[in-house]
Image (tube, rainbow, N blue to C red; front, side, top):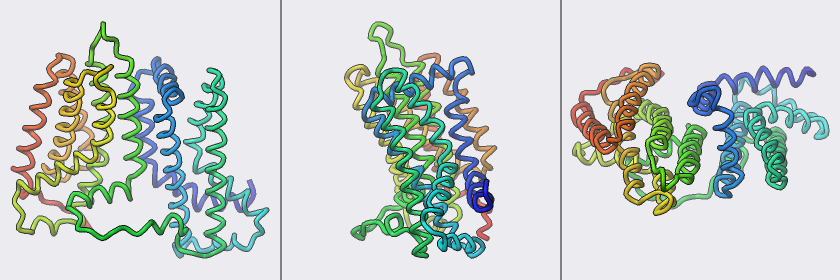
Length: 371
């Protein structure tokens, strides 16, 4: 490794993985910690086969990879604007033939988690004879990394604060936005990778598990259990949104707005977060999933999201404390689902969520240090 690559590694790569270590740990637990070691290969094999056999799912995976690449570009370009990293801009003095390979290697390392899983997808695609899809995966990821390296070079050469294409979206019509829209905007700005990972996991598992339901052995307990794990994964988004609210949106509590109206804003927030799963469930009706059972999934998932949101009004939990509470609720849901009484656990979660909100909203005290 030459001196320039060592500098890029210490100044860009190490901070990137250190900053996103929580995200990578969450994805690793979701992908490799849900099933026992003996079933992990089977799970990932069926997941990859679902990608290769379902065009919509395959396109969603490509889109998710593209979003991850955008995340790396935004991180690098933001880093270059900081005063302590201004020395990296000296790379703009190099000729393009020498600069592009180094920037390409930089992007390869930043993109490495995607590359490793994409390699597994390509190998399985070639093994199953889907050569076109295998080559699409390979060349798509190589092309994304090449494009990112070109964007880095453009940023260095032009000395702009942001790449115009990424930092100047199409102007929107200015309209009055509701309160819950602030949460959605924050998640899409700060946690879009976690949001897309949650949606890919929950929607992907729904399509994979429910599409293979046997009418002669129609048992929804295992799909509901896996669906619960995916929904609990959304708790990270709600935790981050709550932290954002207690730090910067405390002024809203002093406005003359009824408690019921405030509750409706949070229900709308949960509904928008849950919308992709709702649409996916309706696509699976009436076969292989009965319409009544689709509503059961929707009611259960929505009440669980409301409960997750309501628990955050009890106290200012640390992430570790919050995860322990989520684990306890999952164990409770596990026994209800195993007993086949999903309606009662749905009703229980909804009632608790409503009680927590109306009893704890004005009693919540945060101790956030804005400095």
